[in-house]
Length: 386
Image (cartoon, rainbow, N blue to C red; front, side):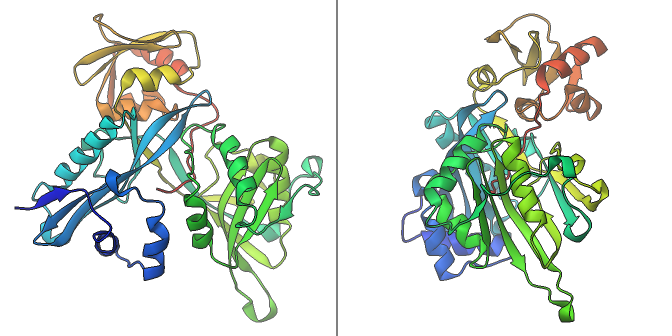
């Protein structure tokens, strides 16, 4: 009989090694010790077979921002893995059920995750709520347009560990400006800094923060280092311009690669050559599972003063700017828990979900109203991996 239980300190290295194997890698002993600070073991569940860890899943406790700059407690589901020797035995379902039960007991109205594979989590009630795009910029071909050039005197290079309080304060302000973004506990920052590497550059502005990792390419005297932009958090348009102006002025670099630019970022329109920024991939980002419909949808903002009746897995809710309540009237929209999760952050239109058969509408006019109600600007985005 395979036992599901909460891991203890003795289990932790085995959990890390099992996770590494499942995802095609391996943690070093230093990484295992470093990551441990971010993990609350009582939020994790492991599957043990005769002492061996053959499956695991857990969650991080954080807040996720909703449209309208309000945030809700969220269980960030993570470290989900089942050993190849124990597939097709129902372990994934048991682990996910146990983690969801724990999230519910903690009174967190939302669960969210980022998926290693796109075909797993819809059946567990998760819907794609944000998109992640992969972009490249040839720095040598572009700069900010002259009318947008700003003074970079407020931008300074910092030692991240010495300036962690300032960086964290900027992040806390920034994450409330973008639906889908999450809070970062103090224990996360040393891990994030270490992941960027010792050669990383960290830029701090009174209203922004950016960090990148270099990959040297000297090319026999024709340097074109690659820059991997790990994070760019700008609270104001001025900080956004100042950070990008500094990044684009960095000598010796050629390609800038990043997954951190939102799909609606104004950067292309700020450049002298818009084509220099290329989107090379567009992928799913955060998947949301609404555990408490009322608490999640009451906290978010809407695009109109309208409301619609949404039937979710047989239960009907009146959702809109006036609040959330149960309903008995004919539904305007009918969907699943996964469809509702996709609607929460305002990044996907009901019309799109209807075309993809993730949602049914009473009529085209209802879809038009629902689009205006749920879709928001700016688009949701999450640059924090979990």
